[in-house]
Image 1: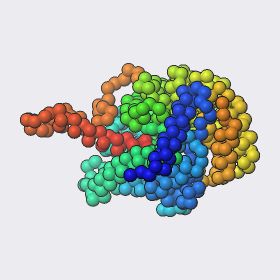
Image 2: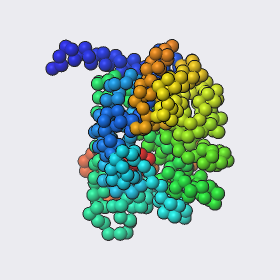
Image 3: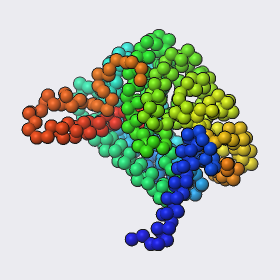
Image 4: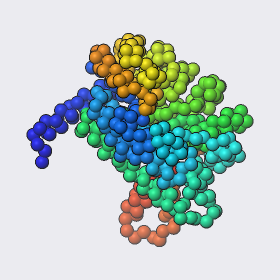
Length: 406
Length: 56
């Protein structure tokens, strides 16, 4: 039975959670909350703060969860991701995934995991396999892609092996274990520190997926010139699946957004023409489909996507939350701030190499320029890794709490 | 969504119930129960491969 003190504490924590959820959701609907919500996407920073190595938080997700909870308890943040390091390399090792450099195995235990894109010649999908992929993406992923990205899964037609069988068994059970653990993690964030789980579900653009995991960036650069019709058809084949996956992981209460991770579909990685003809027409309907079901999407615009703000402005009001990384946040605010909530914009280099005063000054500049009418969430530009200084993250947090009151 | 060709394998599905049903003897019991359980577990296979692609 809980002691009276615990009951009071639980009630306080629940009240804090309710206040933070209201603040966060109000801002995301591009309205004015009581204060500017703070929602830093802290990844390997949590390891540094909690006293773990990058290897520990990448390979042992319970340590990553504990580190995230310690940060949430110690900093006055409204929302965090339960584990922003996210890729659990215990799982990828069980599957036999080849493309990660794992801390403590392939790289130093003090470096965050890395994605190793294969050369164009060794791409996980060959240029003459577009039709096979377009015909049946799920079948292609199981039968062709998985044997290529896994050291243990054998190709169709090859004799089954012990390691092949274990890859599916261990991979499946580990993935289920990991996903189920997020439920408990989110509940602990709520009850231990009154912190909201910031996002729910995942989306990537069809065009980005082809570059990231199938053809590679260089392969796709070739394909948009030599076989653009195949690229478009492949993007279209991905659309219903990516919509389905996004909705299946979305917040049933429709409070927090689906995380949408934007990679290399923008100028200058591709031309404006390729964005207009391939990237956007195969993404926009997915966002509209998600919004039609009542869910927002968090555009995590890694890099600089300001060449495409006019396209994003076509989306229904409040359909997205737009996160700014290296782009000019004031330009973003001018172009789409009247329709969508904006987050981020505090440079990571400043959090790593600047002083606490410089961080406070920059936060003031962003708050004055972007947050006057609400619709802004404080965060760093990109995910915060272990190079960020603790005192600078504290400065960003404390200044926003003091200055960011409406 | 824009008008598109229907996918060969629907989102959320690895082995469609209609395909599995052909392999089974006449179901004397609750056919809907068998279908539901098949589809629920089949969807986990779909989650596995698409999460491998998207998240891991």
